[in-house]
Length: 368
Image 1: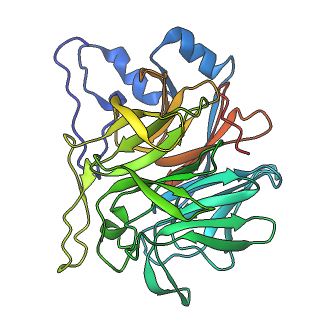
Image 2 (image 1 turned 120 degrees about the vertical axis):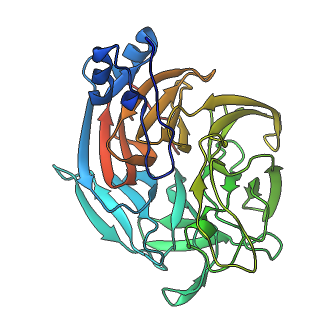
């Protein structure tokens, strides 16, 4: 960039994008902020986008956090959650992709699940990381944990709701390992900051592995400030976890929630790990990517091994070595996303204020 240039830092509410960087001696730089797609690697970027990529803003939604999008192929529906504000919101949302144009409606499972924050699809079921905790939400007590939804019957089942009697903090994001069936999940403290739980955190922030058929819960990572997104590569041997500690706050068992604040010099970093041959523990932690905007929230891996993360007002596509290849730019903060469709080349993005759609050549992994 020609001097003088300057990019403001985010304060959590105001999120300056790369395109908003002031470059007065290059008037063409203003075009960056107007583009739907930014390409940082010409060859690989063209392969990702294909000959006719499209971006469409489909639904205007509330400024609440929207999370946990999961596509159910048999129904061709996209299930997602609405968190806070306000706390205490129970219905989820469903996009019916069979309709033309797609429709958006509310959905309530039986029993309801409070604040799903992460989700995936496995063996015909939706797996949700439920982040809400309340003594009497919807007439029942709920605590952060892992729940499943059978979309064919509308019935939900609790798989996990405690660590030796302690409440989990949040249960933010998760994946089911294709080989073992173990559920790997992150547990930051955002539910307390966002007033989605009525008890302060009882555990350190950490990442766990849960084995449903034995009930075993094992700590696998506790070095991150706020472990958030988590995903496994197609080789089933590499796990990615994001640390969003740049967004954090104070915790005291003697005080109510004081919310969170954003510090641009805090952790907004993704890490890669190797899985051991038995698929039970992590080794070889290494820094993978520093988000160029916002924090790396939702996290998934494409069929070809490219890593995708929702970061600020957009989605970043990274090479397996952490190079930024393409960015999709949006006019709202993206929390998460999911691939849909027969060829898995259509992606739906969800977040604060919007739900949008990308059509390109980047294929998602088939979830079975």
